[in-house]
Amino acid sequence: MKHILITGAGGQLGSSLREAGRKHDQYTFTCLDIQDLDLTDAVRVRRYFSDTRFDYVINCAAFTAVDLAEKHADQAFSVNAGVPALLGKICLEQSVFLLHLSTDYVYSGVIGQPHTEEENPVALSVYAKSKLQGELSLRDNPRAIVIRTSWLYSEYGNNFLKTMLRLSKERSELGIVFDQTGTPTYAGDLADALLSVISFSERQGFRPGTYNYANEGVCSWYDFAMEIMQLAGRNCTIKPIRTAEYPLPAKRPAYSVMDKIKIKNTFGIEIMHWKQSLKTAIENLKETNQF
Picture 1 (tube, rainbow, N blue to C red):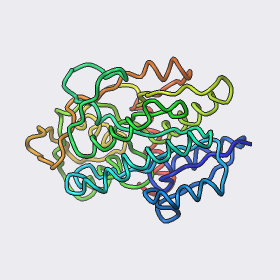
Picture 2: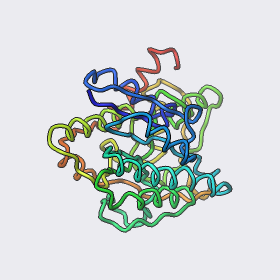
Picture 3: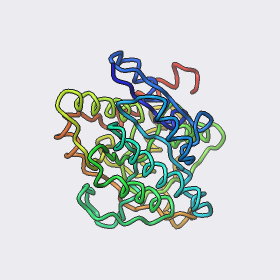
Picture 4: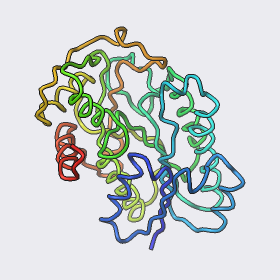
């Protein structure tokens, strides 16, 4: 039975992987979060891997506070760049396969058409630069896959969906930017896709490289918020505003829609439209009394 390590297991994607793993009894899972093992401590990490044998590592650990990273660059680079570099070396040495999660923020967002994996990334913020450096450490690693994703949300943790639902109870009107375009990604779908990549690798061999994954479709944050309110039956008014009207420390790409042909063709993955997946997430929140 194959043994899969999930790092950052307490976050959105890690929690979704825990749930998705219930459908895959051909694997055993070990789930680690920061309180279990500090991945920036190279000595402890190497000792941990010397004591336990894994077949795959899914690295969900990340410093995701995009604006906070502008003031805490050292911490952001330590987690987002240093951890994947360390895991990549260990996995190569011990013949373990690594799936590492990255971000659409490594794209400049200025070309106005879906970004492909072959583009030269142009990171605009400390967060994006730290994530890009983490990617680069794995670029030539034959035992590593990098998967870029975007606008992640779920039933777990803090995210745009849950923030909109909370604020819609507290306010009658919200201003949401309409000039940033991308694709929301449901963490449950991404978790299924990651396990599908592993299942494919078991059958047909590991395919290292960089891949884009998000749900299908395109929208702005304003469109996303509007759909949330409609599906949730909330009466909160959503007002479209420009990015300049809501300045934040970190610069975001204006257009981060990603081309997903490569991951679909390579691994035979079918991807849901973001509106369908959003409906699923809201229904799950209702069922678990988080609505």
